[in-house]
Length: 74
Image 1 (cartoon, rainbow, N blue to C red):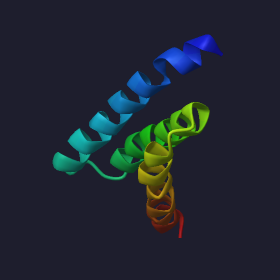
Image 2: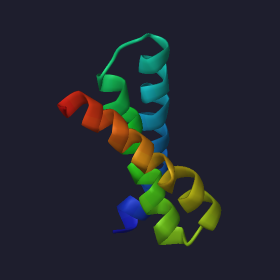
Image 3: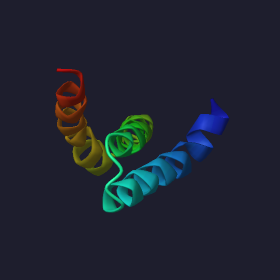
Image 4: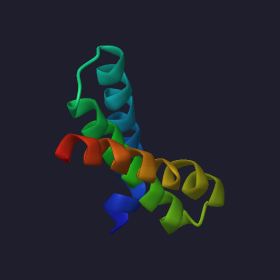
């Protein structure tokens, strides 16, 4: 658990940045997988640290990525 608390933000940041890079390179749909995982990681980190700003910012992005995932499936 300590490992997750210590490194979750960095791992999530890396995933978000890779997702942004893939979006800029127009590599779809893998970009939403990386970025989406980073957003979920940041949301979990916000919940663990009780940081309402992070929860609001990244938590509200989750439904947006859900739309992207749904678009792929349907």
